[in-house]
Amino acid sequence: MGFVDETYKRAESERVIAYHFDVAARKINLDPFMWELLKAPFREIKVQMPLKMDDGTFQMFVGYRIQHSEARGPMKGGIRYHPEVNLGEVRALATIMTWKTALTDIPFGGAKGGIMCNPKEMSASELERLTRAFVARIEDNIGPNQDIPAPDVNTNPQVMAWIMDEYSRRHGYAPACVTGKPVELGGSLGRNEATGRGVTYLTTLALKDMGMEVAGRTVAIQGIGNVGGHAASLLAREGCKVVAVSDSRGGLYNPGGLNLAKVNMHKEEAGSLEGFSGADYITNKELLELPCDVLIPAALEGVITGQNADGVKAKLLMEAANIPTAPEADDILQGKGVYIVPDLLANAGGVVVSYFEWTQNLQASYWEEDRVNRKLARIMLSSYEHVKEVAAQNKVSLRTAAYAIAIEKVARAMKLRGL
Ligand code: NAD
Image (cartoon, rainbow, N blue to C red; front, side, top):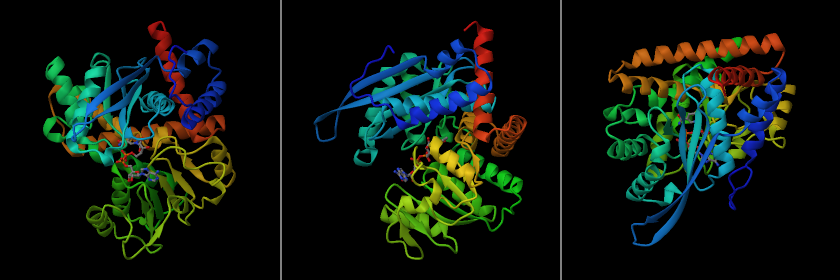
């Protein structure tokens, strides 16, 4: 490994991603050299950013952009702002992006970025300066034909707008250098809701396959941010009963169903879910083990483990978050007959509509929201059907089938390009 970093710690997510890769690679008899090539990212960037804070002091921040594969097109993946961002985690998230774009057959590779910071303790102008400093460090390695960032945990359309502006100042107007932008700056209609919409769509398809009516199904969602928040309201619109939601501090549970409008209003006013009347305040750990039909982790990695999997009571696990389930938990859940829609399929709606946004930017021609949503639904449906078919043919889980499809596509592209 050409990259040595004292602060590096091998993230659990990296172990999980490598495990699933190995299982699928064995199934498809992947060539050993290709195996080695595809397992590790082809470029890893680490930058340091001294930042003048609002009070005049200086603080040092560390950021990463990991580029896993460009075999099938420019690399694509979000940027996360979180105190626990580390190289191993970003590497795993970059790798899964390669599989996600291949699985859904969109012409991108995979990448991911992250800055170790606590955005909750920073002002908007500090966040803007940090974002611009990050772009200044990585500008030569990103761009519309090279690597296109997008939002992830604690980043949003405003952060994407700063990225677009800073990149455009240095390279000329280039809205296609980033996706998830505000609509006024070339963002796509439907992008903000896209991941939650994809999660909702697949939840309805999976429930039907399980022989369950969508209306009246109880749903618990961990993390009510961009992905979880939109999934909650869209599932409620489908007739599901959202019985639990949470943020980083804790969650709310009402077996009769939550009034989401009131929950959102309370969160906005109080800054947290605590103190909401009309529901019990629960821990995030408790939320995962609630009696419900559908469990949707939509926060961080590694929440369902060998320790708590047995307590999961949901019949359908829809992985809206990336890498929420450990392989040991997978085995336990499958043993209990839980239907698992894996992350690289479940949350692909975001990157699919990011692709639509990039396409619209390059053509300087914009689509109506209805067209975005219809095309998203078509890709989610065909990807799901393909995964089910391969899983049934080979008697493997949906996860292994999804990885196998993706790895084969990327390996083929690499071979055709001459490695
Ligand atoms: P977000 O920052 O908008 O929301 C994250 C939510 O999780 C917030 O409600 C936050 O309070 C909660 N949270 C944070 N730490 C938590 C913890 N320790 N326990 C419980 N809850 C916690 O982020 P997001 O964009 O909604 O992303 C959520 C997940 O979805 C991540 O795994 C991300 O990688 C994945 N994802 C996001 C997108 C996208 O388009 N934004 C696309 C694909 C996958």
